[in-house]
Figure 1 (cartoon, rainbow, N blue to C red):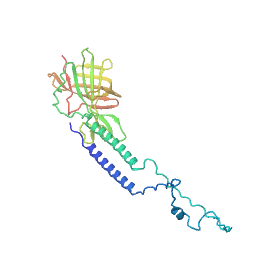
Figure 2: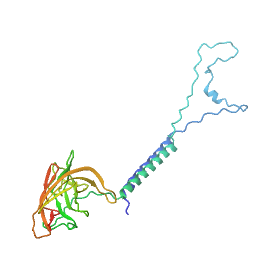
Figure 3: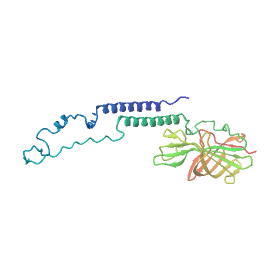
Figure 4: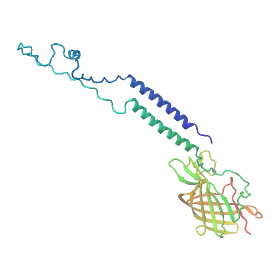
Length: 303
């Protein structure tokens, strides 16, 4: 499996910048003069060098009167003693060791971030399902419409699922109606969705102003689902609660449900097992007809 190079390129650039900062900090530290060490008085009993005392107090600058035996008292006030202030110590952590330690911690954090990004990019992300745009002859049944118990397979035009501040989320409902192993009517709803910069749903998928979004799914069985048959006419009614499906994971409910009412009738040759169907879908307060392109809408003949 190929490892994405983008996180490591970014990490190399950041580490290079940290190295330059470390070199600059070291050079700046070398340019700062070292603090002078305080003078240590000589031990008692050793000869004392009075040169430093002579430099600090030249003749005539003593702060106190010297007793020279002449009984003269100086009239001028003694000069205040000179105070030698020691420079304040630098703040902790500003030395080269502290700077280098901070740079090392920053480098470790960046390495961890880069590793996490690389792992996230290696993980396969779930791609949004694209709406079906395959075409088939209008009178032919879909490839899986012959599944045992299937009564109808229908595909409709666009409806608005959600309105946004800019644009909408639209879907193109596909409904399969059949009978389960217990003899109950069951309907499976598939909603390939798209995000569009529009105020109404485009009549057909594949509009250039739309981008594919996640597909929603729903399944409803009797008695919540009502299916009425009248010869070649079929009416399906129910409220479908949808969910999202991801590979290898359980279905995740969307928290949305839609009131659906479908009315279709056979429009093809009466001698075929599967007959082309035409009809209308009522989606809450919206209406849309069966599609002319893409998956064909068909009904199974009675008997």
